Image 1 (cartoon, rainbow, N blue to C red):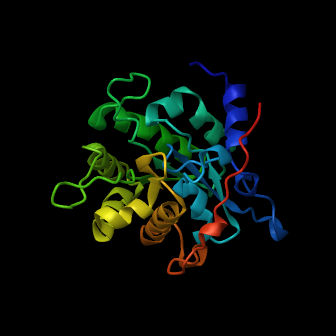
Image 2: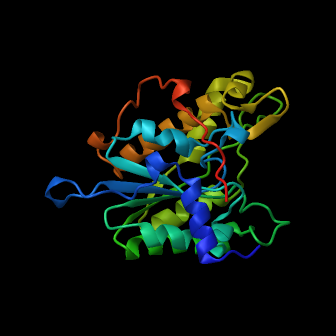
Length: 266
């Protein structure tokens, strides 16, 4: 489906909760709050009341960041690094981003869909080519690009070991980050280790398992909070953020802090 720039802009604005959508306002002395933009897929996206308890990790990330570091979550269900660009969604982000801001990019879940030419990318060619559009676009505007390998699905072998599900996409992103000198958050490796530590049964409490579905890709509130904590710790480890920029890294976050806004209406 082809979307106009106006349609994409309207969709992007409606998809970002108002509390986290602002790009920053002038402060005393002219200082502007920084914004961390998220470009990604359904694992990070804001969910609405009709999808509860499904929760994207981007919804929980602000709980771990200082209040004046805003999060603008532009992640959208079903998008790949390619379709996000083709629909004009990267343009919307780049139109808003400002010097000193951050662009955190997580894709691969839908890049892997070989049967869908609107989304599929090949790890070592078109996937890297599209990721460079995000990196170059952010840098051209004085913002800092950050690449995040895709969070792992809940997948275990017969022996109870957590197994990777993203093929060569994480390796391709790691290689691109080295080549381009971009900060890398290795969420894939960390989430795989977390699922291994939790085990087959306990991980069910982190994914969107309900009475009607067994979803091993998307998270519920505990899962979103756990992955957001990994992301925040990686932002600190990679020196994207300073210690003063993060908070609550070792604190329990109540599930009640998660909310699902009413679906946006046209």
